[in-house]
Length: 146
Image (cartoon, rainbow, N blue to C red; front, side, top):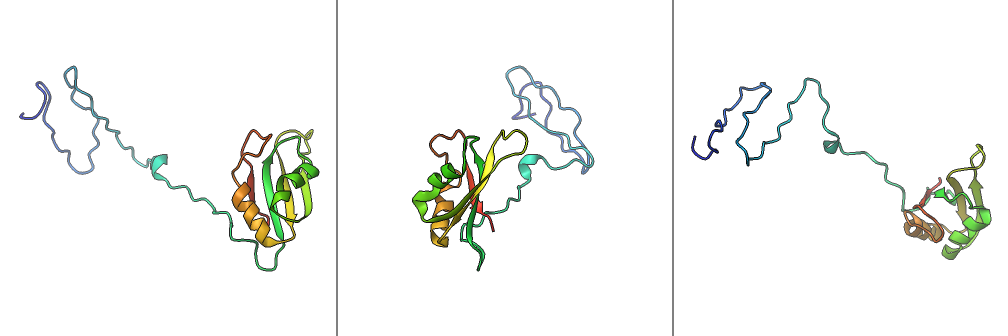
């Protein structure tokens, strides 16, 4: 057949609904095309599925709510004073709380930071979410707690 490598069979269209089970082998030096045979009831491959992720609120707290942030993935050595020092550059902080795990206080910690002004809390969320602070080994997550 014209346009095909010597010894290769020409393309023969399959009838609708037919599943290709075997391909003719090509001579040395030619790449074998990749064709995945679909199976009945197969799910779509993961690369076609778009994950549905919740978008964190970056606009501010709910109306009437306090400016309280939830901070996760904190280092095990963190206490409320260290959390306070991590966020004090963004404005007046009313309260900090660090939540330690009950199982021997190991692993990553989380905590809450309550700001006096929602505007400064908004800046803290936009700046600190996803960053790696000094002395940390992984990124922290900062989002609105309410």
